Image 1: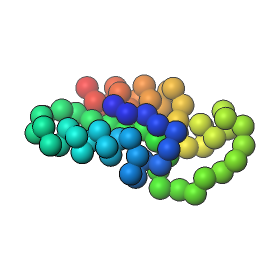
Image 2: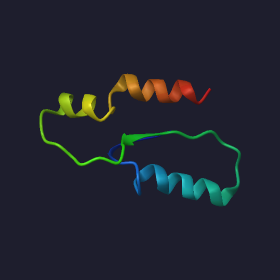
Image 3: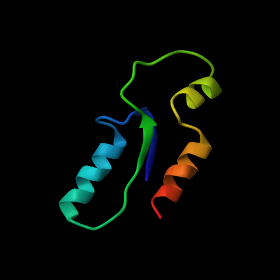
Length: 66
């Protein structure tokens, strides 16, 4: 599970998945981050909600791994 305040394309999640794929381990994975979208400006709480970077969204993604 990775969560980042960054675009998921080419971000931390992709790096982790790349490393795991080389190991060939059967693991469940999930990435939470900004989907392919142009950025915006505003207060942090507004931006976290807009891009799905809230604690609730991260918990939801983790529960989806089970």
